[in-house]
Image (cartoon, rainbow, N blue to C red):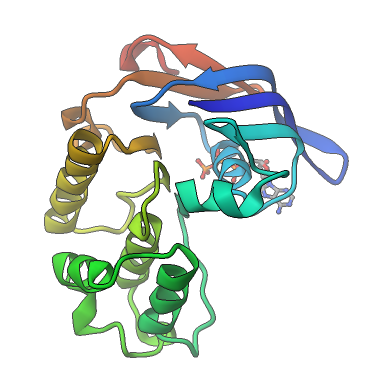
Length: 216
Ligand SMILES: Nc1ncnc2c1ncn2[C@@H]1O[C@H](COP(=O)(O)OP(=O)(O)OP(=O)(O)O)[C@@H](O)[C@H]1O
């Protein structure tokens, strides 16, 4: 279970998002919200890549007190991953695989699945946005994560890759009980997933919603 305690995030003294107490159960969850509502800010906080006020815990592992143990359990795939252009996708993924203590062969299996092994030795500066996005998605699955945050995972992916990603999410959820927090403005592909809980980010707050139609 993911716990947010007295969570808030401000930029330049202006609070973007806050929630005093939130418990997100295991499962596949879908976070929605209008542009600029704070979804990516929330994902980056939970992913441990930006500072925030309050506490975030995954199964009692406190992100601030046990940063390494927490980050071995929680992976983030950013909406628009930004990498140094002179590095190759392989450089990035090898580094992430090591940091996340990925089993040997896992990186090659994901590279083959998404076809990224065909281009990952080239510098990232030469990639299309979809090619870069796939590097970010593979990075989010490396290691043995128990929670994977995927911020706008479908953007720039082609139909075939979207289907592969949806199938991979389902497989990880069913076979390894991996939980997911997904944000997406695109509805149709994700509707195939068994969504446990919907959340809406609105007016700087996070609201639980019962169904997709409840979301504004
Ligand atoms: N590094 C930053 N510095 C200052 N303000 C920021 C920063 N990052 C985000 N913001 C602001 O925080 C607010 C929420 O941004 P965020 O990217 O979290 O929204 P979002 O819900 O993910 O939007 P979208 O659906 O368009 O991706 C916006 O008003 C944005 O301008």
